[in-house]
Amino acid sequence: MYVGVQFTGAVAPGTTHRWFTWGWPQQWDTVWTVVPTTPAVGAPQIEWNVAVERASNSAVTYWISIRNLTSRAVNIEARYAIMDI
Image 1 (tube, rainbow, N blue to C red):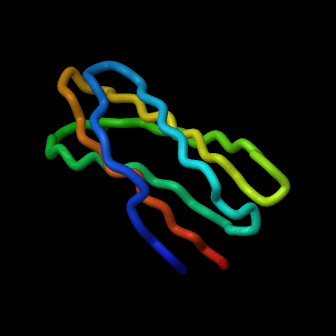
Image 2 (tube, one colour):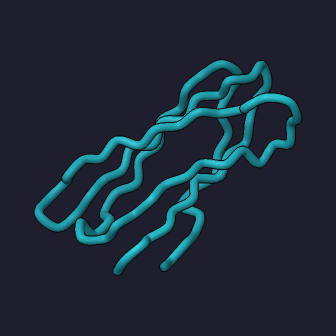
């Protein structure tokens, strides 16, 4: 298994930001997670979802939407795990 951070960023209070990452081999079984890096206690800070585009016969594009559930900016880290290469 390979793991890593694909990108970092910030999401403004109460908004949703969408990133994309392209050129991933279609045969890889890739799992995405998003983790807030801005400390806050007491409630969830973000929600995210991943949409997938089959960009070509051999490549996949992932569209990652991250919603900030708080009234403050939240820094995030988008992580991937390639389960099988």
